Structures are given as C-alpha cells and as structure tokens.
Image 1: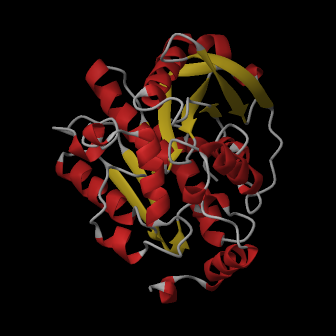
Image 2: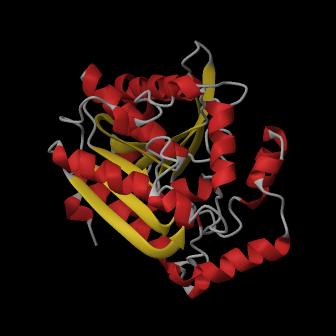
Length: 320
C-alpha cells in the first residue's frame, strides 16, 4: 500500500470514510449509488457561497429534449456580457447532478469573477454512450450561439469538469476544434482519459484511495460498451491528432487511480504543441477539490483554476 504518500488530513478523511462502513458504489444499484453519492457530495465541500446570479436553465439536449442547467455569476447582468465556463460534474457517467457540484461551481464563479454554467447531462446506464457527450455538445453550441440572451460572452467560452466531467470536457474540446468552435481553455480536474487499466497509478491506488478499481470498472461497464472504449469521445488520448486544441490546465491528485491518465494526456498535448499547465497536488486523492473544508490543497486548486480562467478570458486586470 502507498498510504505513506497521503497527507495527514487526507489520511484522516479516508479513515473516517472507512469507519463509517459505507458500502462501495460497485455493490449498489445505480439508483442506490446516486442517492449515496448525493448525500455525501458536499459534506466536506465549502459552504455554498452567495452570488449575484444563480439561475436555473433548460438547455437543448442531444436527443432533441432539454436538460436542466444552472448559471452562476459573480456579477449581475448590469456588468455586461461575461465570459463563461461550461462545467461538467464528475460521477463516472453514472452519478452526480447539479446539486452535488453546486458549491464547487459557486466557488469557480466567485474566484474567477465571471460566469459558470453547470449541465445536468444524461446519465448511464439509462442513457449510455454517447448520450452525455451529445448533451454537452448541444449545450456548448447553445451557449455559443445564444450567449447574449443570458448576458454572456459567446466569444469567451471555456469548458471544464472533474473526473468523468473532465473526460467529457477533453472530448468536447476535440470536437470544438474539429467543428471550428473556438474555446479559450479546457479545465481538466482529475480526468479519466481512457480505459488504461494497466497503468501504474491504477495498480498502486487500486484500493483504499477513495475510488477503487472495482468502482471504476463498474462505472465503465454501465456507461460505455467495450467496443467503444477506444473512441476518442470516451478516450481523448486515442484521438488521431491533438494539434490545434485550446490551451489546457490539468489539476491532478497524486494518490489517484487516474493520475497517470492525466500525466499521459498532458504529455500528448505538449507534443502536439498545445499550451499546457499541469499542477500536481501531492498526498491527496480523487475528488480532493470538493473537500475545501478540510484540505488546503482544494483551496489552492480552486485558486489555480480561477487564475487560469481569468488569464484565458483576458481578465488579468482584475487579478488580485
């Protein structure tokens, strides 16, 4: 075991989780797992910050329907069109919703000084690959074309997400390049970049580090059929080329089964000439950025994301 790598605070969090004796997600049904995830999603997160604007939206979905979304903005409409981050929650394509990541999105809006739109994309197994990816693309193009109606700046759009949301963000950045939709940044927080079950981090952190290998397999088995696991929409590292992508910021946790995924993708982007910033937070696990009540690394990561967004949006004059 590599428990010696954990910070004392992170080790304490994991110890409390073990003592709570909660069943792992892979032993539950998706409905049960969603309820369990929702119940604990913001326990360690920062309190929900008040903002000038918090508005529930409905955005077109990839199947012709609509999906719930939520707009967070640090300033009101009177401030003029604001740049925006389309944010995609984690949860292995099976778990998560607007409520599980509400605090995180509020912090990103507050610290960046601009707007965040969170999307409640369709989840597996009810809606398997590529339903979530289609929803994200539909939401992105809607924001691009209809930004003015929401008081947003459609010329300054970033995309981001954590875990499976990072996968969706990376894949959508690839499609945006191919479709000629210019993004200013892709914010990838502990992203999965493919089904790399044989990587060193998958083996080293397979058990006892918040998200176990069995749970990763459970997510993938529900969401993506085996024949699609080298599709660049699920595995962005498998794309034939990465040249011309928007700049990327990767925020990685050292003690995370998907750590090597992030390192490998950063290397691939750099080889393709894509501007990449890579931040590694030592001694913490997957989902650390949602533990701001107890982990100083979460606050550092939030501030790093905010700085990158401000720079990408040309808001440098507002940096403190």
